[in-house]
Image (cartoon, rainbow, N blue to C red; front, side):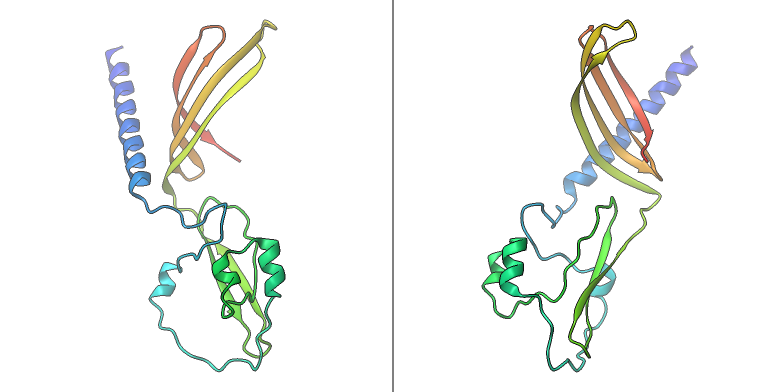
Length: 186
């Protein structure tokens, strides 16, 4: 019995250290530059920053998207709207992804038409997470009695597609639990 207790304490210690490392990682990580409320300039791809910029002959004309219409429909910021030198040459709707999506804007120098190409980078095998969830559940138990519960879950590490964290809940029957959560989401 004592060896099982030592194993449980060891596992809980490793989880506590991993959760602390994940918390510190997200505490000191630079905030995301992309927001849900406004358009912002995004940072270049790290590998591209190191590449030398060269000048190439351009087309006689560049095909742009009607600026007044795109500013109105996409609610682009004033720094784009008020600058006649800023023109939209392409757009892209990049689907949600847990990892990094790299995008490159291209301009065909013969036709003057722009486009955006994108690629989602594969997730590394290991990564820190900071995914939190709280909620309320209501239903019936196996005895057909009504039961409600409040719960919370925090996933703080990912190995492949497996997420590891902690889970706790308390229900209207007076029962509560705190557990280690290991899950595979698909």
